[in-house]
Length: 293
Image 1 (tube, one colour):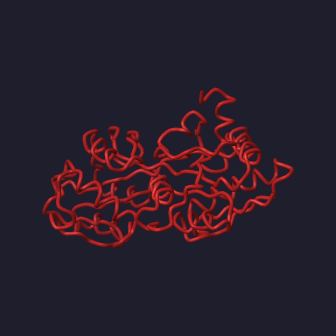
Image 2 (cartoon, rainbow, N blue to C red):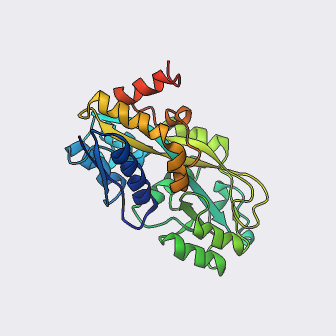
């Protein structure tokens, strides 16, 4: 059984994660020949699975939800064959602000100069969702700056920007740079997250522990979206069962090789996956170990 596993650009974290998992399957399952490939990321990965070009991949659960139901980028191309193997690690939102900005909540961004990442990017979509949930008119209620994370960190450091939205695993280099210059992280509160969840079922609360960043002396709550491993009903139950079983039996060694996979558990793998269906083969394994009834 050939398993093609598209990931993202060769320089990104997702490429390394996919390579580690596919190599582990290739080494440990005798009837599987698995290999990872570079791709254009989540949307491309979902399209490759839908078209049958590839068999397993990873994307954020929000994009998986959109693919399954034919929404946004997938309008007219719903993929009801999409099935989840496991929810993996969280991709948290991080709102970084200068102290002189006076920003303590998302609503305080009104009237400020704030970086929202590249226009039309998934991160800009996060800004739209969250600021709207906080009662702001997006983007009219503040002065948006459409720039990359690294450029935003430079502007925060030299004080020419009030705040920036960064979506990345922790610790993120751009956030560390800004916090070293005296910037702080803004809490995304329960009421904002609950408002988001009414429309977008993929959001979860996430804690950035104290000490993750320079000068961060307390925990910060934010929102996050889980990175989700998925496949298609075209892949048979026994193969997906073996992929799932082997993944979890080798998760400790995977965690040593890839920090994003460190500390993952099968108990958490079935949570925060945007209410998407598990593949029958994966569900069989989770039932076998008592995670599902």
